[in-house]
Every structure is written in C-alpha cells, then in structure tokens.
Length: 627
Image (cartoon, rainbow, N blue to C red):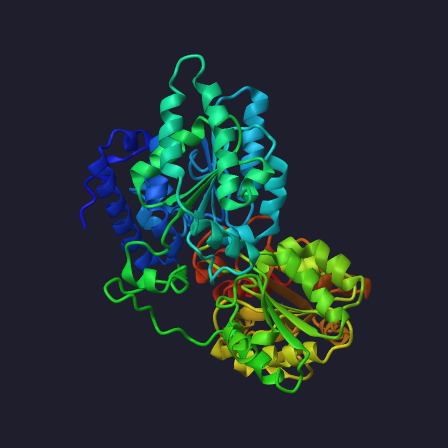
C-alpha cells in the first residue's frame, strides 16, 4: 500500500493543512499501516482501528503538545503516534528499542502521560487541566477513554471530583460497546439507553457555533440557550444525563467515524466554559473485516496472516491449564467461584464460564472491587478464585491486606503473566508481585514451573485452611525441560547431584534455563545442583537446610531484587551462620522495557547461557566473587 499522504504528515500541524478528501484518504492509509505492522509485530488492533477518524479530528482541532492529549490504557494511540512524527519508526512498534505500544512521554512530547493500565486517564487529565488553570494557561486537555474503562471505579472518583472544576477539560467517551470482552454492568446498559434516544446534536452544534460569534453577547446567549436546551432535553428524556448531573456539558452521541461532525463537535466543546463530555460511537475493528467480526480476538493479537486473519496455532498455556483444573474441581466443590476483571479470555477461565455460568463473575475493569467482592464471597464459605494479570493486581494491595489477609479469608489469587511478559513493556512486565505480596502476613505464595506443579498448587489452594493463597505463573506454556525435575515434596523440586558444592536456586519459568545450565556445566566437569522452589512463601525450612551445606549458592530470580525471594533466602542463610558465597541475580531497581521474553532473560542474565557464564567465572575465580 502507498502512504502518499501519511508520509507527508510529520506533525499535527500537517493534519490541519489537508483537505477533506485528503483526510479520508489519510484515515485509510493509517489503517493500512496499522494492519501491515501489527500483522508482523502483534499488538492491540481492534481498538486502534476504531479510533482513527477520532484521532485525526482531535489533531485537526487541537494543538499538541500545547494542548495535552491523554489516552486511557493506550489501546487507542497508534494513529496518534503516526500523526506526531513517528510514522517512519512505526515498523519498530513493540520491538526492543522501538516504539512502545502505549503512550510514553520519554518517546515523544506529544505523549503527555504514561499509559498501560485502565481507568486512569480522567484523573490524570483533570490534574493536567487543573494545573493549566492554576498557571493561567489557556491550553486544553483532551482525555480519550473507551466505554470499557468506565467499568473501573477510579473513573467515577475523577468525574465526581472534576465536574465542578471549571477547567478546559474535554473528555471523549469512545463508545464501541466493548472493553476486551463484552462490557458488563449497569453503565453499559445506561449507554445503550442513551444511544437509543432521538438525536439533537447537529442542531445544537450549528446553533452554538453561529451564535457564539456574535460580538459581546454571543457567549451569554449561548449559555442561556444551553440552559433552555437542558430543560427541554430533561423533558424529552424524563431525566438529565448522568454526566450533566455531575457538572459536565454532555454532547452526543455522535458518529465517531464522520470527521466533519467530529471536528464540529470538538470545536463546539472548546467554546464551553467548563468541563465537557463528548460521547462518540465507533466500531471496534473498523476497516478490517476479521477484526470487526471478532474484535475480542484482535484486541491484543500476535502476528497474523493479513489476507485471512489467521494466527499461528496456539500452544497450550498455563492460563488454559488453570481453567482446566478449576473445571475439574468445580463439580465436586460447588463453592468454587471464578472472578475476572474483564479478562476472562486472557486469563483462560472462559471454559469455567461456559460450564458454570452461575459461579462465574466478570466485574469489569475493577480489580480492587474484585478482591473485596471475593472477600465477601469467602466470608460466607465460598472459594473464590480471582484470575488476574500480575501488574493489574498491583492496584489491589490494600484490599488484599485489609479485606482478605487481616480477616483470614480464603481467597485464591491466580496470578497470570508473572515475570517478563515482553513486548507490552514496563506497564505489563510482572516483576513486582512477589515483593509486595511477600509483605502480607499469612499469605501463601506458589510459583510453579510446570503444569504438574501448577495442578498441585491449585489443589493445595482449594483445600487450604482459611488463608489467602497466591499461585503465580508466566505467560505461555511450560518447557519440556521442567519435566526432568524430581519432586521430593510439594514445596520444592531438585535436579542434579545433591552432593555438589555449587547450587542454583530459582523458581518459576526460569527453572528450565537452570536445568539446561546444570546439564551443560556437567558436560564440562562442573558439578552443579539445582533447587527449584515451588512454594516461595513461607520458605521451606528443609530447602534452607540443604543450602547451608553448599559452598556456593546462586539465586536467579525473574523479579525485582528489592523484597525478592532471593533476599529472604540470603537473610535466612546469614541468620543460620552460612559461611559460603551467596550471589543473587535479579532485576535491580528498574522498570523492564519492551523486548521479547528471550531478549529480556538474556539482558538480565537469567537465560541458560548467562547462568553458565556466571557459575564458570565462580569456578575460575576460586569462589572469590562473593556478593
């Protein structure tokens, strides 16, 4: 596909110079570039395809970066990237050292706020708009948020706070009737009612635009007409809209794929003296047949065949095995429930939903609510399993502490995407859950390295006493190497010669790399023993006793160093008078940028080759590399 117009757009100012016909062609070229790139690199496709005309209209009307544009999550920012000088680099999307799949201020001045998690944009946008007001700036703040993000409670806290703020804050509700899975809850039903009402927007926009131009009295007349219009609409609708009750000028719903209408609406919003909520309707997956027909599958997608929409045959995953094990135990234990925060597909528990719909709860993108809701279920004897991505669980620390652990309630946290996730970058790499969960009294944490241990951990969790249990596992599937482990007990497994003086300790996915390292070192005459922890809190006393007998211990950890299991093992050894050398290799006080998982494991010295090199250096130095 030729990108004649897109290649001429190096900044938002170039968008303002295009004719109406050229804008239509620009949108077509943007979609073509998205499809070309995402089909090779993977990424978030459906939501980005649906927001093309909206993004073009925003840059037609507003002046970025003077005017701040805040995207919620960032699932709608690809067109924005192309229109703000990053078209030439777009082929590097989600690659190591390339463009992020989300908004990143360190990547461009046009990305006003970091994105990656849901329901944060209204709060951030309100903060930016309030600061502008305090500084005397006339700049606008535009927040773009999907209706799926409106299932998160933080949005309502921000709306409640911002409705009377009298700021130049324009919130664009991009309503495509979807988040990742189909939207649930009362707000989704409320939007459906709004969509069904007779339109009055076109008349309003034209009238306001004309009258506001009258010298001296135009704005006063516009304000009076707004009051009359609100009165009339209340009579027609029988009630004011939710947003106007909060203090926002509500505009819409309008066609989110009609650029002239969008431009008129945005120009009208700029003339309002106070916060505005513009409601636009878009089609998720717009312009690509396969994404329109199945937007959930193309929400976050790996590389695919552009002509057919077919992706590579997916291998079995830890997520799917979780769903399988829950379905296995659920018939005999009718108290088992499954909870998701709009991620039933991603966390593998759709099979549970289909078999046990009365025990499946999708709470929307509301992780904090999900945890306390689970606590309420547990209080009455249910066994709730909350399946959630590692980085999304970060939001729930207080709820786990106060509403679960303090009350000694039995809730199972099935923590998906633990460890490196890869191309989604800093906001999605799950490297902190072990550190923050380990601070919580009484919680039990498992980190299986294979399906066999995952099954045992879920069984232990279901049958545990009244304590919270976390089972964390990586994205993707198990390694064949992990099947070599010998389980002496459920708490840990071993591999290699128990009498060896050198020992590798690890847990989770990188156990497979450690097995490979042990085998390779053995072939060169270097005898190494491997201890793979399955239960990482509380630490198995027997495992500590084994390590006390080793001359050199290397702990490799796919997680943040501060608060890590490796630190706790080192502390435990020191307390018991360990006299050997101990070295911890982990992520040291940094966020992990985007790259493939193998690239990240190599970068942080957690791949087999790095393990071999580090241990070989210890042999050659005579054990003097003590850290």
